[in-house]
Image 1 (cartoon, rainbow, N blue to C red):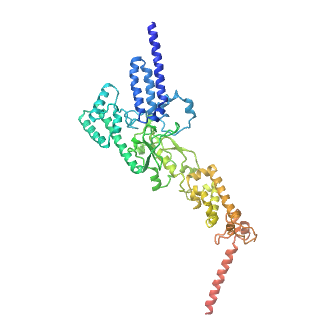
Image 2 (cartoon, one colour):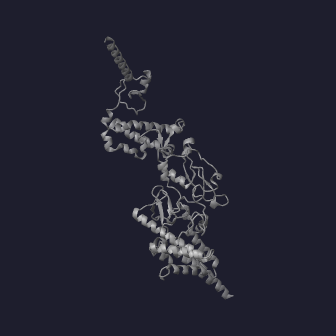
Image 3 (tube, one colour):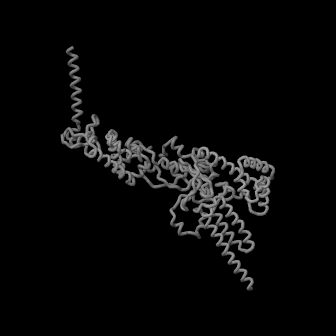
Length: 540
């Protein structure tokens, strides 16, 4: 009886020790990965496979297997996915609550070996062969020996692949192809050869990418200008791949970011990129879809994702159809992460600024278009100026600024101080008064645009009316009341004659029967000249 108690106590202590070791490994993965970029996968793989021996000795297989599978999920699944959420729950709940909510794909599969979302594991050179039993290990060793990857007994086969030249990689690829054709189907050797071929092809692709980056510094794919991305510096800066929708571990994975549209992807996903760069569409056709959610239905899409053409159904959360409120099309969870933005069609027709869900492709396009002045409100919806007071104010301020531009454009002092550069963020404000960007409308609704224009208006007005004598000399005096006060076209309570551009007090102009004295004199002079010419012709 005492021996059984001692054995059970020993097993309990062993479970505690092993659990502590594994939890320590899980909590220190980030620190280990930052120092050994390619060694994290091997370390965790060694720990995970080594647990099997510990289990056989101590007889605590259930506990260790649970913890080990949790460590694996931490390295493969996004922290916000259901699989990883269970592992993260017991550790750092308070830290998770303090972090800001980040954009992530949401519900995604836990990346099985034959996953359709990501055909590769997170570690490019990890053991891709099925199973870890002695038969698979023997097959792996035999293949490595045939390919010459096991000659150096002090390095692992994966390290040998990294040290191989481009010519050797290409030769081994051809060897793998020949060996695969010689094997029978559905055998462990054939599967191991296929996985080894994948490793070699990935290595060859990385060599090509490295050479292209060395020569140009940029990878060009589907219009994307992909540049190598530096690892994130903080724990909160999590990023996800736009192709496979899985997390990018910066210190482990080679990743790229498009300098034009902010498209991000793993190095292994570059060749599989099918999404055109949003900047290409902005350059070719910078126009919005101005119909409110032009939905066409899943049947017209043949129940496939509008981007990657994957089958989408309501049978599981991994393949649920997600509607993009901008295009009206349906996407899979890997192409639609539930990003929410303000839509131009709803703003233009309903003055509705509520954010709605859009696909990743639509979000990147709308982000590039947000500050482009492509909306002519007077043509698209003139009634907005009757019901939205902010737009009425903005329109008046923009018209005044265009009038002030005539003074500032010919003033040397204004050019030396570059006063018009105050509108550099909204260059179209000094070109016309009727074109708006989506950001202009958002800022008009929030009141930011009115405050901004009032400040610029006041600065320009003070320069023209008080600070600069040259600009003051270009002012006007009302010809009707003959008051010595200098007035300008952008002042309140004045009217500008359409015929001669003379500035008059609005009250004086109305009392005079809405007739400009200068235009009346010019008309009388023209009549007199015409009459004189007729008299001269009659005398002849």
